[in-house]
Amino acid sequence: MNSTATVQRRHIGRLALASALLFGAAAFFVSPARAADEAPDALVQRISGDVLDTIKADKSIKAGDINKIMVLVDSKIMPNVNFQRMTASAVGPAWRQATPEQKKRLQDEFKTLLVRTYAGALDQVSNQSVSVRPFRGSSDDKEVLVRTEIRGGGDPVQLDYRLEKTPGEGSGWKVYNLNVLGVWLVDTYRTQFAQQINSQGIDGLIAALAARNKSNDKS
Image 1: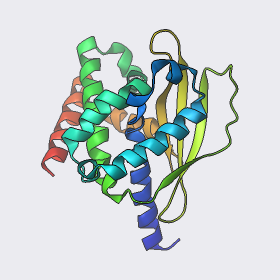
Image 2: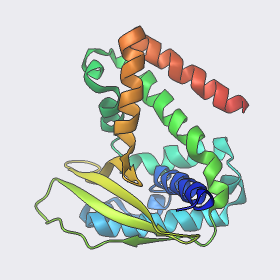
Image 3: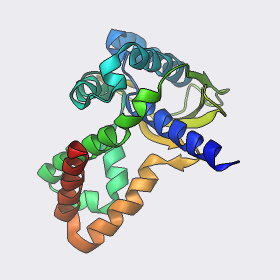
Image 4: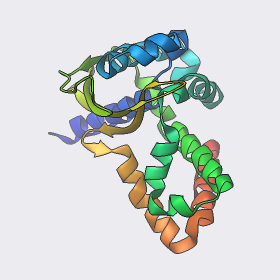
């Protein structure tokens, strides 16, 4: 693969992850009963397609309007993601020793980091579409893997979701990890976070995330 194709593929990978981070943008229009009963692959197919359509139709989101993206994430993505589990997995063993306030700060800063890091790729949304690969799970599974491809603008980009089945109120399938081009999002951040925690502890990680978010805000 030549250097130009490699750069294009990496950028499409960022786009795929940016779209995944906005996963659930159209879930506002879905009744809780439907969400609870929906199969995980059907959920991913419907919402992945809808989120791309939402981005294509909204110029301010495509332009990376952070405030608008944050509103979208808070109102429509979080019901479809177990973000506490995602953050806890990224932080690793130190999460168990964190105070409730530290856990809240970690989730807030981690969410901001993800949105700001990948918002810039949204302006590349054009003719992409999502294809869900054959699903191999069963109705009894509590955790599943749904494999998809983002097509359009070159070679297909692998984008996989790990989901868990949640019981009780607000039940349904929720995303807790993402894989883009063979790299799991949570695993990547766990390595980065571990270095910061080992040197400066949980408060050091929170401070580093806050500083990085402020830097991204100015850029």
